Every structure is written in structure tokens, then in C-alpha cells.
Length: 361
Image (cartoon, rainbow, N blue to C red; front, side, top):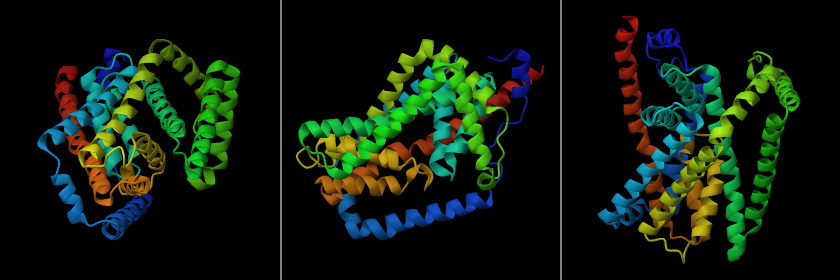
């Protein structure tokens, strides 16, 4: 944590705006994202299903089913707060709620939102008195654990489908690729944690790679990446000794509850287990989550809907019911967190502004 003088210097600064400027690249990315969304929702999906049938499937849900889905979605959002608290000792749940909901809203609405969200997370952490190096460790750990779970879920889905006799060639190939990436990622992480020499070697190699990419990225690597990764190793080991179990559990729960929201939505709109098994839903969920990691549109809007629709209909789901379930699922887990995040952002701004006079005095 920061000293009182350091906290004062942070808190007396003006609240950080979400967006400071718009680059040409971001404008181009916004245009591409807009075109992709229009093509999917205006031209492609209407050729697959009649939106009137989709609306009828949504309206067929009972109020109890809607309330159940809403409650489960809120619980899923709360699991992200648990992940944040697990990775940063000293962080309160109210603070975690503001940080996660605000950064999620940014990631879901703005091109390049993931990077902007990380920057805003850092600013919010600073306002709560955490030092930059500890913030970097927290963001790196939550990102790493989320990546590990995202890569592991398709493999788990493959095993479950294999037990039920429903593994296809494309699914098998994708799972093998996911397994290779997962093993490679874990090996790099283990090498970094196992020895300082390994951390220095990986850091220097990463710095060399950034130098080679400088003509494309137009950004030169800053600092000694060998020393940076070595310092990351020391801080990570110290943190993982106390929080690895809690962080792992919270991360798995956050992904599993999100999957359960999708599964329950499908069942509520009428897609039975006979039409699409829960294992097939897990496989569709897991592989589309990997696909959404490619930053084509903010939060994968359009891409996720198309991917889920294609995989679930191929598995045997009714087109109108599947699209209805996917749209409700995305409304609850993608759209509704945006206004919640906006409220969280303004609450944080007021909190910082309210503490300024007391710190100045």
C-alpha cells in the first residue's frame, strides 16, 4: 500500500477520464467493428431465422424463469469481484465491484476496450492506494488465470463429449491446438517461477521480440525486460503462496457460472437436453470464448452471437430458440453490465472527488 503522502498525491489529481483521445487506428477499428455487427445482425441472422419467431420464443418464458436468469447473471458478475479480491490482498469488495464493472463496461463498448479497461483499472487501483508494481502483478495474475481456464475448458469439453460419444473431427483438432497452447503457456509460466535465470532469459527474449516488432508497432520496448520479469517472479511467488487456491477457485467459478447462465437460458427457451446436450453446450461455449479473444469487435459482439448460433444449431437446436437464448444470454451478461459499469465509474469519480478536500487539509 502507499504511504499517506503518496495517496494524497494520487487523490488530489483530477479523476481520470475513460478516453483521452481517439486515434486513426481506433476510428478504423470502430468502422470495421460496426460493419461486422451490421452484417451479422442485419444481413446474416435474418437469413437463418425470423426475428418474429425469436421474439415469440423469448416471450414464452415465464417471469420465474426470467427472474432466475437475472439472479444467476448477477451472481456471475459478483464472481468477478471475488477474482479481483483474490489477486490483490487489501482490496475490498466494494472497490473490486467498481473496478471490475467499470473495466467490463469499457471493454464491452470501446474498440481496443481491453487495453483501455486495463488502464482504467490501474488508475482506480492507484486511487485506492496500491503501488504500480503490485497492480501489475494483480492484472497479470488475473489475466493469466483467466487464459489458463479459457484454454482448459475446450479440453474438458472434449473429454466430456468423448465419454458421451459425440466428438467430431473439427472439435478434436481444435482441442489439440488448445491443449498445445495451454501446455506451452504453463511451461513458460513455470520456467519464470522456477528460477531467476529462466525469468531473466524469457524477459530478455521478450524484449528482443518487442525490438524486432518496433517497425510495426512503432513503440520501442521500455526498460530491461529481463529485470522486469525477474521482479515479476519475486512478487508473484510471494503472492501465490497465500492466494493461489482462492484465485484458482474464484476464476473457475466465474467461468462455470457464465456457462450455466447460457445453459439455463437455452433450457428456459425450450432447447432440451435431447436436442443439445449440456456437454455440447459446454463445447460451444468454450470454443466461442476462445474465438472472442480475437479483438474484432468490442466484447466480441456479433462474433459471439454468430459463433454460438452456428455451433448450437449444428448440434441440433431449433434456430429460433437458439437465437432467442443467445440474445437473452448476451443481454444479461454483455449488455446490462454496461450501464452498471457506467454507474460504477461515476461512483468512483465521486468517491475520489469527495476525498480530495480532506487530503488537502
